[in-house]
Amino acid sequence: MQVKRKSNILSLLPDSGKENQDKVHIRRRQREPKGDSCPKAKDNLQGNEKFRPTSCLDYLLKGASACGIYRLYDSSSNSFPAYCDFKSEPGFAWTLVMSWANKNRAWSAFRRNSLRENAPVNENSPIWNMYRLSLTRMRSLQAHSTHWRATCSYPTHGIDFTDYIRGNFKDFNIVDFIGSGHCRKVEFANIRGHIGLQLTVRFWQGVKSFFLHTDSSSSGCNFNARSGSVSSEDNFGYYHTINPKFRCTAGDLSTTQWWFGAHL
Image (tube, rainbow, N blue to C red):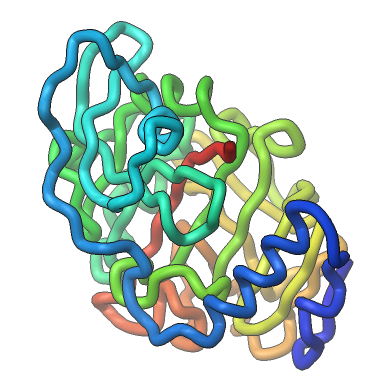
């Protein structure tokens, strides 16, 4: 469902169940001041031989609420540090998979390498300006995740659903996808104020050629964000052509994040 730019997305969500919770949450988040929605937390890396969390959801199930660095275990039982977000979307636990600053967009790991390629950057030191997990760790997280999302400048803006996209792995497996301009279903998309719910968006991703991204200047799928776009505008990755009106590429210090997550 494509939503007119000035329409109220909240009026389109039903008043029951999880979608009603989302409605209340989006309204509250739109009123909140900008900034990281999570409370600042120290590293949570203390070892526990009996507790072997494989994703941030395991911590949420045990009552964790402070966002920060937590210790996870991959499919080979090797531990690694990961950033967990428990606050931005109630009921969800999100694990940071990638983050990079706009000034670093030309790095191969953020422009050329697809998600199915192994191209780790600072994988043992999660930082917002240059970070990408190894393929082994991504695969391990994917096995315990139902959803994925991309966000813009999370450290400074938190989540207010501006320049944001979310989908589930059942409808669209972003790790294994290879294609050019294919329509794939997402749950929610917002690019420069153009909003869509449960509709298809055009995606690109190629091995050793271009990282997963959309092009909001193109047409052909349900979602249409052409108004206000620049020619061949890249969104949420690749960034060969950028638009300063898109939050991820508004300035050199703007950042892009990709996350894997699951809900209670």
